[in-house]
Length: 356
Image (tube, rainbow, N blue to C red; front, side, top):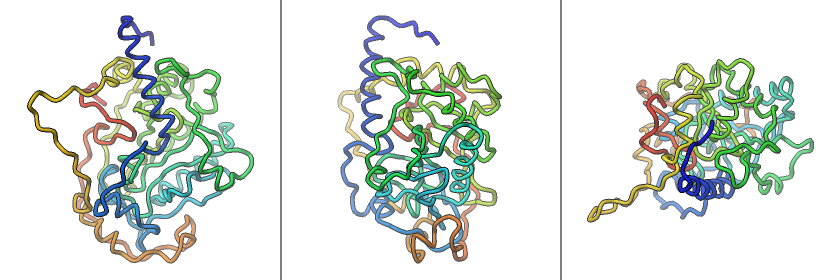
């Protein structure tokens, strides 16, 4: 898509891109240089829990405001996957998500020429808000997959902590895919992930979405599941639907039925998404942000925190010992209206095109 901009706007875009790309590369999945959360905050409390609770798997609340019961861990290694950044202790998820990741890793290796997945953050042992890196990933139904193929050898613990991210973007060019990095196998991997009926959204950088719109020649039925968003140039974010029967899980509105390659995508190639926030009106008293507390989350999250832990990580690794009885579910929740409520990296503006 050609960009018809003035010289001033071109300069602005270069500067904006440099800042966004720099933040993306420096942060990757992690948030950059954030202060420690207050000890009583939900981030601090959920982040300090090292094991999931005993109980059947149950997501409580919304992707960006909730927790989970009965989480299981993705095994550190599998025949077609390896988990990354183990020190973060974020390889926990609802069994539906863990099963999906294992299936995607097998199918991509068998059918798409992708040697295996490097899996980043899923959720904390009991979900909830994270100290850094994400606003979502709170109920075990979100997962990050690197756009770096799995090496042929098992990575050491040190390598899993230090292996750098690889951006798909071209340096010093606004939202442009680097042709020396991007491969058809990456495109096939994304569309494989989108093909599963339980997958509701896949968040990618706007440049990746545009590349897929411009070049994908296969079945485009599921192309609309690829949603453009800030960051996500070195990994993609899979979100699955609330599993059947989980009435305590707040669903998100379905994506539009089209391929997502029209006006909503074009908006990302204007200056609006990248413009700095407008300064407050003179005399306006600044609002001090308030940290999320456990009391702000669904009521069941207090019970999840208070519940006994499983005996060990091994007992809660996917395919291991089943849990105890479930925590009683909450009432059915209405769907959230749009993507606006769930930024992953960076802010999401209020003036997104209608239909997003």
